Image 1 (cartoon, one colour):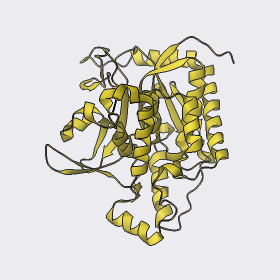
Image 2 (spheres, rainbow, N blue to C red):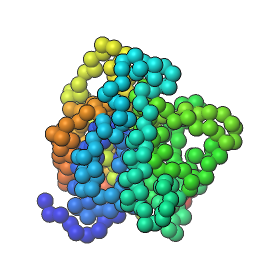
Image 3 (tube, rainbow, N blue to C red):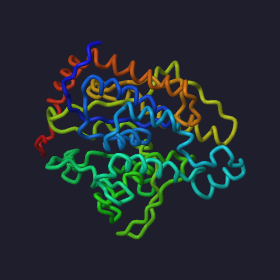
Length: 345
Protein backbone atom coordinates (compact mmCIF):
# COMPACT_ATOMS: atom_id res chain seq x y z
CA UNK A 1 0.00 0.00 0.00
CA UNK A 2 1.32 3.46 -0.84
CA UNK A 3 1.33 5.60 2.28
CA UNK A 4 0.34 9.18 1.58
CA UNK A 5 2.36 11.95 3.21
CA UNK A 6 -0.43 14.44 2.65
CA UNK A 7 -1.85 15.75 5.93
CA UNK A 8 -5.50 14.81 6.38
CA UNK A 9 -7.62 16.15 9.23
CA UNK A 10 -10.53 14.20 10.73
CA UNK A 11 -12.49 13.74 13.94
CA UNK A 12 -12.13 10.36 15.66
CA UNK A 13 -14.49 8.37 17.89
CA UNK A 14 -13.31 5.34 19.86
CA UNK A 15 -15.66 2.62 21.10
CA UNK A 16 -15.39 1.17 24.59
CA UNK A 17 -14.48 -2.45 25.18
CA UNK A 18 -12.26 -2.92 28.23
CA UNK A 19 -9.20 -5.00 27.39
CA UNK A 20 -10.26 -5.12 23.73
CA UNK A 21 -9.35 -1.43 23.52
CA UNK A 22 -5.75 -2.33 22.70
CA UNK A 23 -7.00 -3.05 19.18
CA UNK A 24 -7.78 0.64 18.75
CA UNK A 25 -4.07 1.44 18.84
CA UNK A 26 -3.25 -0.74 15.83
CA UNK A 27 -5.97 0.87 13.72
CA UNK A 28 -4.89 4.32 14.86
CA UNK A 29 -1.30 3.59 13.80
CA UNK A 30 -2.30 2.72 10.23
CA UNK A 31 -4.47 5.83 9.90
CA UNK A 32 -1.66 8.04 11.21
CA UNK A 33 0.82 6.37 8.83
CA UNK A 34 -1.64 7.19 6.05
CA UNK A 35 -1.38 10.88 6.93
CA UNK A 36 -4.33 11.41 9.27
CA UNK A 37 -4.28 13.82 12.20
CA UNK A 38 -7.13 14.34 14.65
CA UNK A 39 -8.95 17.56 15.45
CA UNK A 40 -11.75 16.52 17.81
CA UNK A 41 -11.77 13.13 19.52
CA UNK A 42 -14.30 11.30 21.68
CA UNK A 43 -14.65 7.95 23.35
CA UNK A 44 -16.22 5.77 25.97
CA UNK A 45 -14.56 3.46 28.52
CA UNK A 46 -11.34 2.07 26.99
CA UNK A 47 -12.05 4.38 24.07
CA UNK A 48 -12.05 7.31 26.51
CA UNK A 49 -8.54 6.34 27.63
CA UNK A 50 -7.29 6.31 24.04
CA UNK A 51 -9.17 9.50 23.13
CA UNK A 52 -7.80 11.43 26.11
CA UNK A 53 -4.22 10.49 25.30
CA UNK A 54 -4.64 11.25 21.59
CA UNK A 55 -6.11 14.64 22.50
CA UNK A 56 -3.04 15.34 24.64
CA UNK A 57 -0.73 14.59 21.73
CA UNK A 58 0.19 10.91 22.01
CA UNK A 59 0.82 9.06 18.75
CA UNK A 60 -0.24 5.47 18.19
CA UNK A 61 3.41 4.39 18.34
CA UNK A 62 3.75 5.99 21.79
CA UNK A 63 0.50 4.39 22.95
CA UNK A 64 1.71 0.96 21.91
CA UNK A 65 4.83 1.46 24.01
CA UNK A 66 2.72 2.55 27.00
CA UNK A 67 0.41 -0.45 26.85
CA UNK A 68 3.16 -2.94 26.15
CA UNK A 69 4.72 -1.94 29.45
CA UNK A 70 1.50 -1.49 31.41
CA UNK A 71 -1.31 -3.87 30.49
CA UNK A 72 -4.85 -3.34 31.70
CA UNK A 73 -4.35 -5.52 34.76
CA UNK A 74 -1.40 -3.44 35.94
CA UNK A 75 -3.49 -0.29 35.56
CA UNK A 76 -6.10 -1.56 38.02
CA UNK A 77 -5.46 -1.32 41.77
CA UNK A 78 -2.48 -3.32 42.95
CA UNK A 79 -4.61 -5.67 45.07
CA UNK A 80 -6.27 -7.10 41.94
CA UNK A 81 -4.87 -10.62 42.40
CA UNK A 82 -4.43 -10.78 46.15
CA UNK A 83 -7.95 -9.72 47.14
CA UNK A 84 -9.72 -12.59 48.91
CA UNK A 85 -13.04 -13.82 47.56
CA UNK A 86 -14.90 -12.78 50.72
CA UNK A 87 -13.37 -9.31 50.46
CA UNK A 88 -14.52 -9.08 46.83
CA UNK A 89 -18.06 -9.97 47.85
CA UNK A 90 -18.00 -7.33 50.57
CA UNK A 91 -16.74 -4.65 48.21
CA UNK A 92 -19.34 -5.60 45.62
CA UNK A 93 -22.14 -5.26 48.17
CA UNK A 94 -20.99 -2.22 50.12
CA UNK A 95 -18.89 -0.28 47.59
CA UNK A 96 -20.91 -1.16 44.45
CA UNK A 97 -17.74 -2.55 42.84
CA UNK A 98 -14.65 -4.62 43.56
CA UNK A 99 -11.80 -2.27 42.61
CA UNK A 100 -11.32 1.38 43.54
CA UNK A 101 -9.78 2.46 40.26
CA UNK A 102 -7.58 5.13 41.88
CA UNK A 103 -4.42 3.67 40.36
CA UNK A 104 -5.72 3.91 36.81
CA UNK A 105 -6.97 7.48 37.39
CA UNK A 106 -3.53 8.53 38.66
CA UNK A 107 -1.85 6.65 35.82
CA UNK A 108 -3.89 8.47 33.16
CA UNK A 109 -3.22 11.84 34.80
CA UNK A 110 0.52 11.08 34.88
CA UNK A 111 0.51 10.26 31.16
CA UNK A 112 -1.37 13.48 30.40
CA UNK A 113 1.07 15.51 32.50
CA UNK A 114 4.03 14.01 30.67
CA UNK A 115 2.70 15.53 27.44
CA UNK A 116 1.43 18.84 28.79
CA UNK A 117 3.72 19.73 31.73
CA UNK A 118 5.37 22.64 29.88
CA UNK A 119 1.97 24.19 29.31
CA UNK A 120 0.73 23.57 32.87
CA UNK A 121 3.72 24.70 34.89
CA UNK A 122 3.42 23.42 38.47
CA UNK A 123 -0.21 22.32 38.18
CA UNK A 124 -0.68 18.61 38.89
CA UNK A 125 -3.98 17.86 37.14
CA UNK A 126 -4.88 18.20 33.46
CA UNK A 127 -8.31 19.75 32.89
CA UNK A 128 -10.60 20.00 29.88
CA UNK A 129 -9.82 23.71 29.72
CA UNK A 130 -6.24 22.75 28.88
CA UNK A 131 -7.36 21.08 25.65
CA UNK A 132 -9.34 23.85 23.98
CA UNK A 133 -9.01 24.58 20.25
CA UNK A 134 -8.21 28.31 19.90
CA UNK A 135 -10.82 30.29 18.00
CA UNK A 136 -13.23 27.35 17.59
CA UNK A 137 -16.82 28.55 18.09
CA UNK A 138 -18.80 25.67 16.59
CA UNK A 139 -21.38 23.63 18.48
CA UNK A 140 -22.24 19.93 18.57
CA UNK A 141 -25.43 17.87 18.48
CA UNK A 142 -27.60 20.75 17.24
CA UNK A 143 -27.22 22.28 20.72
CA UNK A 144 -25.21 25.37 21.65
CA UNK A 145 -24.51 23.83 25.07
CA UNK A 146 -22.00 21.40 23.55
CA UNK A 147 -18.83 23.07 22.30
CA UNK A 148 -16.58 21.94 19.49
CA UNK A 149 -13.84 24.02 21.14
CA UNK A 150 -13.17 21.10 23.50
CA UNK A 151 -10.74 18.83 21.69
CA UNK A 152 -11.92 15.91 23.84
CA UNK A 153 -15.38 14.54 24.72
CA UNK A 154 -16.05 11.58 26.99
CA UNK A 155 -19.25 9.59 27.58
CA UNK A 156 -20.38 8.41 31.04
CA UNK A 157 -23.70 7.38 32.63
CA UNK A 158 -25.46 8.83 35.68
CA UNK A 159 -27.50 5.84 36.88
CA UNK A 160 -29.06 7.89 39.69
CA UNK A 161 -30.68 10.26 37.21
CA UNK A 162 -30.92 7.73 34.37
CA UNK A 163 -28.99 10.04 32.06
CA UNK A 164 -26.13 9.82 29.59
CA UNK A 165 -23.41 12.38 30.28
CA UNK A 166 -21.42 14.09 27.54
CA UNK A 167 -18.35 15.46 29.29
CA UNK A 168 -17.17 18.05 29.95
CA UNK A 169 -20.34 20.08 29.23
CA UNK A 170 -22.83 18.04 31.27
CA UNK A 171 -20.73 18.43 34.42
CA UNK A 172 -22.19 21.93 34.78
CA UNK A 173 -25.46 20.27 35.83
CA UNK A 174 -23.60 19.35 39.03
CA UNK A 175 -22.36 22.89 39.66
CA UNK A 176 -18.89 22.38 38.15
CA UNK A 177 -17.34 24.52 35.41
CA UNK A 178 -16.60 22.28 32.38
CA UNK A 179 -13.18 23.92 31.97
CA UNK A 180 -12.27 22.84 35.52
CA UNK A 181 -13.16 19.14 35.20
CA UNK A 182 -10.11 16.89 35.53
CA UNK A 183 -9.73 14.74 32.43
CA UNK A 184 -8.52 11.76 34.48
CA UNK A 185 -11.70 11.96 36.60
CA UNK A 186 -13.89 11.99 33.48
CA UNK A 187 -12.00 8.96 32.13
CA UNK A 188 -12.39 7.22 35.49
CA UNK A 189 -16.15 7.84 35.31
CA UNK A 190 -16.33 6.44 31.80
CA UNK A 191 -14.44 3.22 32.61
CA UNK A 192 -16.51 2.35 35.70
CA UNK A 193 -17.57 -1.11 34.55
CA UNK A 194 -20.52 -2.16 36.75
CA UNK A 195 -19.53 -4.71 39.42
CA UNK A 196 -15.79 -4.24 38.75
CA UNK A 197 -14.75 -0.64 39.21
CA UNK A 198 -16.54 1.24 41.96
CA UNK A 199 -18.77 4.03 40.61
CA UNK A 200 -17.75 7.65 41.01
CA UNK A 201 -20.04 9.42 43.46
CA UNK A 202 -20.68 13.04 42.48
CA UNK A 203 -22.04 15.47 45.04
CA UNK A 204 -24.27 17.87 43.14
CA UNK A 205 -23.46 21.42 44.26
CA UNK A 206 -26.82 22.63 42.95
CA UNK A 207 -29.32 20.03 44.21
CA UNK A 208 -27.08 18.73 47.03
CA UNK A 209 -27.90 15.18 45.96
CA UNK A 210 -25.52 12.32 45.23
CA UNK A 211 -25.22 10.70 41.81
CA UNK A 212 -23.57 7.38 40.96
CA UNK A 213 -21.60 7.63 37.71
CA UNK A 214 -20.68 4.48 35.74
CA UNK A 215 -19.43 3.32 32.34
CA UNK A 216 -20.84 5.28 29.41
CA UNK A 217 -21.38 1.99 27.59
CA UNK A 218 -24.49 1.42 29.67
CA UNK A 219 -26.25 3.87 27.33
CA UNK A 220 -23.89 4.50 24.40
CA UNK A 221 -20.78 2.43 23.83
CA UNK A 222 -20.06 3.82 20.35
CA UNK A 223 -20.88 7.57 20.22
CA UNK A 224 -19.94 8.00 16.56
CA UNK A 225 -22.78 10.52 16.24
CA UNK A 226 -21.22 13.09 18.57
CA UNK A 227 -19.64 15.34 15.92
CA UNK A 228 -22.55 15.23 13.47
CA UNK A 229 -23.91 18.45 11.97
CA UNK A 230 -26.41 19.30 9.26
CA UNK A 231 -25.35 18.20 5.80
CA UNK A 232 -21.66 17.51 5.14
CA UNK A 233 -19.36 18.38 8.09
CA UNK A 234 -16.16 20.40 7.83
CA UNK A 235 -14.14 17.38 8.93
CA UNK A 236 -15.05 13.72 8.41
CA UNK A 237 -15.64 11.53 11.45
CA UNK A 238 -13.86 8.19 11.49
CA UNK A 239 -15.13 5.65 14.00
CA UNK A 240 -13.05 2.91 15.59
CA UNK A 241 -15.31 0.01 16.60
CA UNK A 242 -14.46 -3.18 18.50
CA UNK A 243 -16.23 -6.50 17.92
CA UNK A 244 -16.22 -9.58 15.72
CA UNK A 245 -18.33 -12.09 13.90
CA UNK A 246 -21.20 -13.39 15.99
CA UNK A 247 -20.11 -16.97 15.26
CA UNK A 248 -16.69 -16.25 16.76
CA UNK A 249 -17.85 -14.68 20.01
CA UNK A 250 -17.30 -17.07 22.87
CA UNK A 251 -20.23 -18.28 24.93
CA UNK A 252 -20.26 -17.18 28.55
CA UNK A 253 -19.61 -19.87 31.13
CA UNK A 254 -21.50 -18.96 34.31
CA UNK A 255 -20.46 -20.77 37.50
CA UNK A 256 -20.39 -18.05 40.18
CA UNK A 257 -21.45 -14.48 40.94
CA UNK A 258 -18.31 -13.01 39.38
CA UNK A 259 -18.52 -14.60 35.94
CA UNK A 260 -22.25 -13.93 36.16
CA UNK A 261 -21.29 -10.25 36.45
CA UNK A 262 -18.77 -10.43 33.62
CA UNK A 263 -21.38 -12.09 31.40
CA UNK A 264 -23.81 -9.24 32.05
CA UNK A 265 -21.14 -6.71 31.07
CA UNK A 266 -20.09 -8.61 27.94
CA UNK A 267 -23.70 -8.97 26.84
CA UNK A 268 -24.47 -5.30 27.57
CA UNK A 269 -21.61 -4.12 25.38
CA UNK A 270 -21.80 -6.72 22.63
CA UNK A 271 -25.57 -6.44 22.25
CA UNK A 272 -25.13 -2.93 20.84
CA UNK A 273 -24.39 -4.73 17.59
CA UNK A 274 -24.62 -4.29 13.87
CA UNK A 275 -28.40 -4.07 13.74
CA UNK A 276 -28.35 -0.84 15.75
CA UNK A 277 -25.75 0.88 13.56
CA UNK A 278 -27.10 2.68 10.52
CA UNK A 279 -25.62 2.29 7.06
CA UNK A 280 -24.43 5.89 7.29
CA UNK A 281 -22.36 5.09 10.37
CA UNK A 282 -21.01 1.82 9.00
CA UNK A 283 -19.56 3.66 6.02
CA UNK A 284 -17.29 5.65 8.36
CA UNK A 285 -16.41 2.83 10.76
CA UNK A 286 -13.22 0.80 11.11
CA UNK A 287 -14.49 -2.57 12.38
CA UNK A 288 -11.80 -4.28 14.49
CA UNK A 289 -12.17 -8.02 15.13
CA UNK A 290 -11.54 -8.59 18.85
CA UNK A 291 -13.69 -11.69 19.30
CA UNK A 292 -10.87 -13.73 20.86
CA UNK A 293 -10.55 -11.36 23.84
CA UNK A 294 -13.11 -10.64 26.55
CA UNK A 295 -13.88 -7.13 27.78
CA UNK A 296 -12.90 -8.11 31.32
CA UNK A 297 -9.72 -10.01 30.37
CA UNK A 298 -7.33 -7.73 32.23
CA UNK A 299 -4.42 -10.18 32.28
CA UNK A 300 -3.37 -9.84 28.65
CA UNK A 301 -0.16 -11.52 27.52
CA UNK A 302 2.25 -9.75 25.18
CA UNK A 303 1.10 -12.14 22.45
CA UNK A 304 -2.53 -11.10 22.91
CA UNK A 305 -1.60 -7.41 22.99
CA UNK A 306 0.35 -7.81 19.74
CA UNK A 307 -2.54 -9.80 18.25
CA UNK A 308 -5.06 -7.08 19.09
CA UNK A 309 -2.82 -4.41 17.58
CA UNK A 310 -2.39 -6.50 14.44
CA UNK A 311 -6.15 -6.97 14.17
CA UNK A 312 -6.59 -3.20 14.41
CA UNK A 313 -3.98 -2.66 11.71
CA UNK A 314 -5.67 -5.11 9.36
CA UNK A 315 -9.07 -3.51 9.95
CA UNK A 316 -7.76 -0.03 9.16
CA UNK A 317 -6.04 -1.21 5.98
CA UNK A 318 -9.30 -2.81 4.84
CA UNK A 319 -11.19 0.39 5.68
CA UNK A 320 -8.80 2.51 3.64
CA UNK A 321 -9.28 0.35 0.54
CA UNK A 322 -12.89 1.46 0.21
CA UNK A 323 -12.76 4.76 2.06
CA UNK A 324 -13.19 7.13 -0.91
CA UNK A 325 -16.23 5.30 -2.26
CA UNK A 326 -17.75 4.69 1.16
CA UNK A 327 -17.30 8.26 2.32
CA UNK A 328 -18.91 9.57 -0.84
CA UNK A 329 -21.91 7.35 -0.06
CA UNK A 330 -21.83 8.57 3.53
CA UNK A 331 -21.91 12.21 2.43
CA UNK A 332 -24.87 11.57 0.14
CA UNK A 333 -26.76 10.12 3.10
CA UNK A 334 -25.67 13.07 5.27
CA UNK A 335 -27.06 15.59 2.78
CA UNK A 336 -30.48 14.03 3.25
CA UNK A 337 -30.25 14.47 7.02
CA UNK A 338 -31.29 18.04 7.73
CA UNK A 339 -32.43 19.66 10.96
CA UNK A 340 -34.12 22.93 9.91
CA UNK A 341 -33.69 24.44 13.36
CA UNK A 342 -29.90 24.80 13.07
CA UNK A 343 -27.29 25.70 10.50
CA UNK A 344 -24.21 23.57 9.83
CA UNK A 345 -21.03 24.38 11.79
